[in-house]
Length: 243
Length: 74
Image (cartoon, rainbow over all chains, first blue to last red; front, side, top):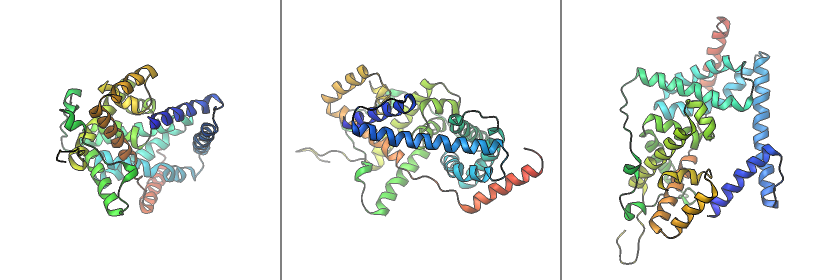
């Protein structure tokens, strides 16, 4: 409950950033300042980069690669599944996106534009590669079959083992599970939960409507939860019950 | 309610609907556990590390762009 209250407070702090409102408590005001600083710095940074691109500054492409190359490569790796394909997709995306950025007026649209280009590049590559079967799961199939299945618990990221190898094993399990999701669900999950795009930005990037983004995100998370429950899950122990 | 749990986790729901979910979850241990497991799933995903762009790959991209630019195809 406290987590939700903080999320809601942070959400409204973001709104406050854009409407120049004043938070009521010192804690919230501090969060507004941090979020505002981060958001404004990112926007100013992208605005400066766009200005350099429009001026045809020779160093602008290198800055563009260094700022976004890792994220685009990572997205490509997680969608295409292998490094060579991801490298090709990243190079194609960075050059193609850069060429059209001169016409982008609003720095806020840069991320959704960039991810639109890389998503389309990934889709084109998948058409050339081996057939990837797609299976739509209904919400009913994704619901737990009963209370026992519902109560299987997933490790809490705040309480992962201190041992680096054990933490890495958990991360690898999550990474592999994500790779098993059908592509149209995986891309939404990657953009929303890893790249941290908003629902609106994700919809723009994937050329979907927002309700479809929300539906696919929820299904992706449910599928992922079910896979992780099988591989990492812990059944709660109760007095007299086996775990 | 099940269909909207992600929106609830993301803080995208109307407060009245949130209250409905919280009222139910408060009285239903399996639903409370499931919601927590879904939240943890999201957090584990968000905890995955970012990819670094290898320096050699960055240089390859910059060189590729330079060739495209020299060819006039920009």
